[in-house]
Amino acid sequence: MNFTELPNGMCDGFVLLKKCEEKKTKNGSTYLDLIIGDKDGEMSAKLWDYSGASGLFEQDMVVKIRGTVEQYNGKDQFRVSQIRPTNDNDVFNLSELVPASDIGGEMLFDMMLKKVQGFTNDNLRRIVLDIVSDKKDLMVKYPAALKLHHAMLGGLMYHTMSIVSAAESLCRIYPNINRELLLSGAILHDVAKTWELAESKTGLAKGYTAEGELIGHLVKGAMIVDETAKKLGINGEEVTLLEHMIISHHGVPEFGSAVRPMFLEAIVLSMLDDLDATIFEVNTAVNKVDAGSFTDRQWALDNRKLYNHGMSDTEHRVNFDGND
Figure 1: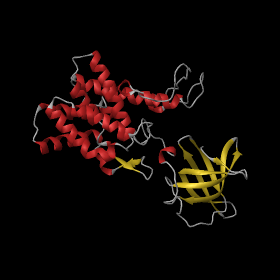
Figure 2 (figure 1 turned 30 degrees about the vertical axis):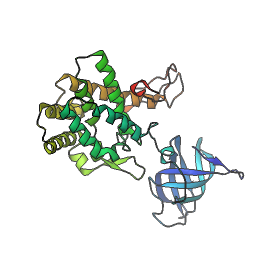
Figure 3 (figure 1 turned 60 degrees about the vertical axis):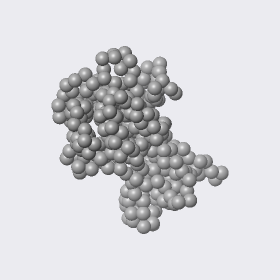
Figure 4 (figure 1 turned 90 degrees about the horizontal axis):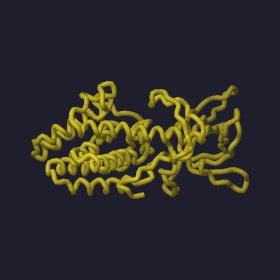
């Protein structure tokens, strides 16, 4: 936890309330049972003899907190002496409190936009430009998932551009892949996550919208392509190909695809999507243990334990377009 140490032995700082519950002690007094966190980690916290207004503090709220770190059952626990909601005069960076992309979503969006503007296929260029221009404000800040891969501020753009960069490398190796079609599918494959995921106060996802649960981002993404093409007066085969790439990119029906990928670029997109998500999840898990150690079982990765061999950097980074 990134606290500032004070001369009196206490420490303070801004934290995110990842859990906040009012509870009663055996003698009937009210206390706050908290889990506080920032991008470096989390710990349990207690505010004993709480006499403030009920509902003043809630989950996903950023607060300023002061107190001491104590030991309880062999683990750190923060004993709160003072806590308050943040105000307009407070200076803090939300990306220091929640997981966030180390490259800004705006920068990644601009990189993506330059690629699309250079497309020679007019139908693909117009469709993609129209959609991403309309969704820009959400795309640059949205996470890519609720809990798993790229569930961080700017995660959607990070995941998208990771796949775009990998796709361009593959196209240099395999020139029979249609670069503009593959990149178009990569850029749009998760664009409906901005509609499927419900945003919390922190900018992360707090759950799924009702429409997201009922329809999902694959089908909605294809619907967005269809609506955009009709608006622009485009009826070429590229529309159908893009729709197929979006509704098939999860690979198999068990994972939500309406159909399996049925042409080269759709197959490559599905494999790159799975690869990027897997690399992120492996790095995240392995980064939590020392070299020479195994992680806990990862249910999202076939319930496997993963080994940190210590021979590579476990921080997740992507070298976009060969640049650091």
